[in-house]
Every structure is written in C-alpha cells, then in structure tokens.
Length: 257
Image 1: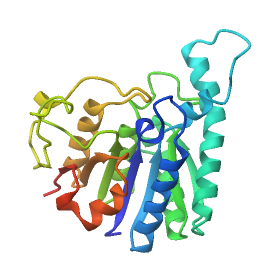
Image 2 (image 1 turned 120 degrees about the horizontal axis):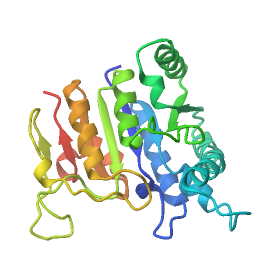
Image 3 (image 1 turned 45 degrees about the horizontal axis):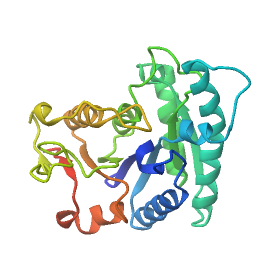
Image 4 (image 1 turned 90 degrees about the horizontal axis):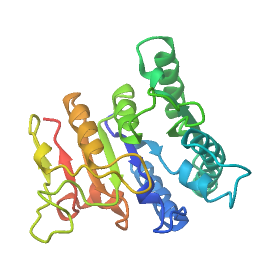
C-alpha cells in the first residue's frame, strides 16, 4: 500500500521523568494515529513501554530478582496493562487493535516468517491495527532484538512499508550534543551518507536503545528503499505535523531515493 507506515514509539517517548507511563502522551499518540488512518494511511504500531509499565505495578517482590527474572516479570505484567490501555483508547475511534508479540527468530526465512507476515496482512486487510512488541517473557538470550528500533525496521521490510517513523525524545540526529546550541539538526540524509561521527553512544534512560541504534536501523532500512524519519514523540501533534507541515517540523529524514 502506498501509504503503509510503521510507527515505532520508544519508552522515553511514552514515560514521564519518574518512569511511569504518560497516559496523556499515549492518548495523544492514539489521536494522531486515528487521524492518519482517517487520511488513508495504513498503520502498524511498534510500541515499547511494557517493562516500564510492569515495573510500576509492583511495589515490592518476594525476593531479589536477577535482570532476566525482572524483565520476564515486569514485561508479562506490563504488556497486559499496555495493550489494555491501547484497546480502550483506540476503541473511542472504533478502531480494532490486535497484539503481535514476536521474537528475533521469527524473522529468519521460513515458515515462522511467512506465518507472521500472513497474520499481519490479514489484520491490515480487515482494518485491524497491529500493535507489535518483542515477547520479553521468553526473549531473554542473545537472540533478543537489540531494541524495538531493530524490530520496527524488520517489520517495515517484512510488510513492505513505504515509511518507518522512529519516535524518540529528541528531534533527530544533530551534528553535536543536542543540548549544545551550536549543534545543528541534520534534516536530510541521502543514501550512502555516513553520519557515524555525529552519533552519540548513550543508551536511552527508559529503554535499551539510543541514537546509535536508531541510526543503524535507519541506514539498514534506507538500503531496502524505505524512507525513515527520526522525530521527537514528545512534540505535540508530531505525526500530523510530519504529514501536513514537514518543512516546519524538526526531524531527520533518511531519503529512499
């Protein structure tokens, strides 16, 4: 579909400074996705936030948990809460949603890949919005995705999307530290451009990714002929503005031609 778009929203774009889920921002995201669908866009949402959701559900646990146990526990609880919130918010627009929990091995060529692709195609064909996340309850080995940036890039290629939008908590890729007034936002990245000298190596505070991960994903997906946009998910009405006023909306765009 000409207007098929994959939108990835990171934990830092969905959580408040205290680490709790920002339901107001989540509601705004849903409003914007509903607008996109009303204007002919076919949307697949890749959403982080499950672990952050689950971590805030338990005040205490019975014993000390290692990092794998924590991830399994918090993601299991948080994913239920997260998809429930999305269900309620999208229901206001009479939009049906479906949950897709996946693992890296599902993207290897073969039956699992074809089954996952067919499942998402039938959802889209019937007007159902796929909400995708990694299955963190079982993906606890070296086979985990680097983060949901990598996952969203694979989904965009699997589903032959025209555009991948990576929503973070900054406007895009800068020539220096984003907090430095002398740094300039890089608005367009032609194919074959090397921006590695400008990429900060810090991880995000709420998730596993960072700009390094987004750059790696964007470069890979760009090679597949898919346009990639990195933008600030905390900016009000960012998705609508990227469609209606792209020239006035801060973002970094990896051109597909």
